[in-house]
Image 1: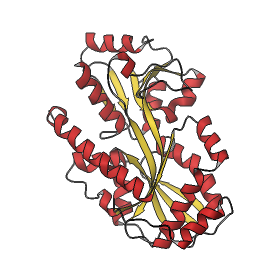
Image 2 (image 1 turned 90 degrees about the horizontal axis):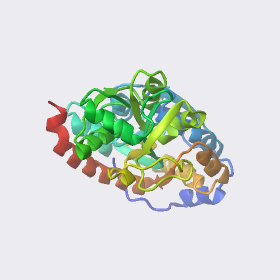
Image 3 (image 1 turned 135 degrees about the vertical axis):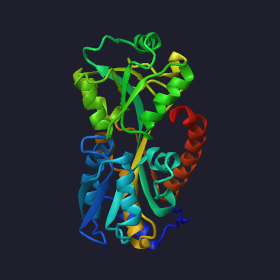
Length: 323
């Protein structure tokens, strides 16, 4: 992801001071948003959360284009190599799969150096959910069954290289257990598989399955946070079960490299304004979205650091995964 040192230009400062006053995006009145997963997943959840507020601050419509496949790589290849570099096209960028795609597969040709970081918005913790009629009432029930049936329990994830895929591997490494990993094209289809009883469990993200947890159609067994969350006080963490795993998916927006500074300033200002928007904050809480807004260079630095971390993890596990 191309990081350019960011300074508060007069335009950027003016946009921040304007706050909730509606502006007019200088590039276009329609911004195309490439999504690398099917509708209904974590990327789409982020889009539905942010875009009404971004539309108001930028005065532009957001047109979501769903391009599922290859764990987001098709969309991100299109963003970096086939999209206009004028600020009219952006993409929702999901980590860690944004980087793990090419870390794990030399055939994938894009990289974060070919993107302009705009903003991370949420860091969505991982969670294990099972169907409402599942025999597994607790995490220990689930782990015991996995121990008694090595490689037999089916675990859905959002795709090879995603955070759910990696958290499954980390649990296998930490416990010595093994699961039958079932990849889907996004969190939505993974959750749907659990809802329909097609898999024993889905390793998913809280924001995507929270409504199902509230309705009782999915049962949470454990969450991958350091401490329990206020919105799910009865759901234990992996850490308190002596499995030291904290994981999740961060989701934000990026543009192609070398978009005009003016467009970059305006986009960043729109996301900075979300930090002070009380309606946005409340909407995020209602949807169990854990906000983690980092813009511009800060987002770029975050992604670069994660790239290094997952390069190390993949180097440790790739031989076992590829067997």
